[in-house]
Length: 561
Image 1: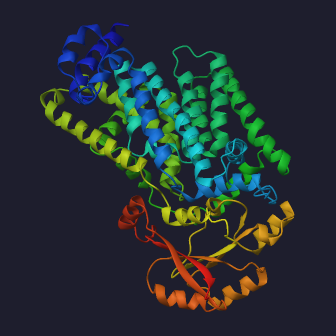
Image 2: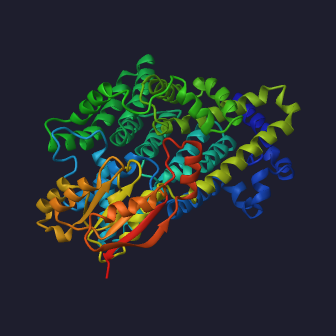
Image 3: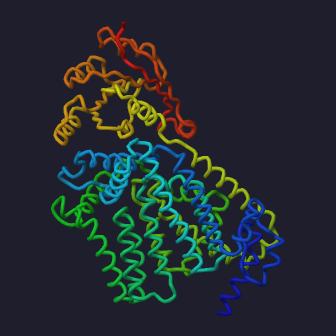
């Protein structure tokens, strides 16, 4: 107890010079903290009383504010999977299209999570919200409030392992870290799995962990597993520590909790729609081992650079130092998170979003041991201005970037033209034309029942008994397809397009003449022009090969006379 009190007093003494954003409630330092208020106090003086009395409430209010801001303004989707393997599938289920269910093998994505989003969309439609953008706003708001649990449990875990001062700093970082508000409102399973995962470790890091705690912790990690299969690595890390400590009974209880929830969700779904429980796990493993190099790959140190960059140097270096020293703070957290990081670093398929569940652990453990180091350091007390400047740089970069991202519109060039045409009651079919390739079309935003090709149209006819007049057909003409091929597709389908979306401006007049030539006595009338969002333009600037900057031109096909 004496050592613990000594550490907390030392940490409180060092904190004003290191963070300049949080205060300690320790009575012995109360007067000095009032004189040496941090950056956050200077920015929001009206919060002083609340901040001193209940810092968690203030941290959660900041987190909610940024996430609601992102939910309202951050339209679109950041990654392919979060739309086409979540929202598109969910809407198709509501429209009677058996995505995944009719396939011979389970999907490589969470049917449970797609089903949850299908429920959100169904409820939205039931209460009269039918516009695609409005339905997505409702979905983002649900995710915004749900994701605040990441901040809450990050705070509570740190407080349980250390003190309120460190917990407040960790909470602030999870609330404002530049990518967290933006990604929190996206349909990313890597973000959705975090609250139950952190809730599990909140029980595991208790001083006295009962069998009931182990059972609930296992069940919570099992729930996180139903969203993101890779979470099983965290369970493996906890299991290794338990076996090392010879906690065999607790290991059985923990495993029982995990398997009960995992079987009740993933196991039952696989058994009902396919052949046996957990078939999707087998299918996922087979697919990823045989297609490991078919996606984004990189060197073994790629995720290390990701973590260092995403947590903003030089603060990321301080966190790294603390994290390396933190294995004694919580063996379970450290080993589980480290295993998760190492295995993902070794596996060839490396996409930045895969490593997202690692960040709360890295930040929490890193802050605890970094501030503990400050108490003993002879260097930093002599260089307080340097440390203050480092933290000020960190907060400025994070808060400004977080706000900018929260106001961004991702994939606007693909979504906005369809949203615009969704308001046209006379839309029967449309052509998407481009001087290059055409990215996957998010037809969800066109509203109603839409089909991209003959196979989809036939599926819609079978599911609804609809005729072609009731289905919006989308034809695609990339630069590799001739106008004669497009003409044949239109004749075969029988649905004549009356709108065209031209992607990119190069040789536009020539492309317009070529396209309109397949229609008799028709002409093109321009009705709208849509520019890429600021975020799309920034992404294009830094990576033009992957992120195309395509302005869209919308034309209506009308009779010549």
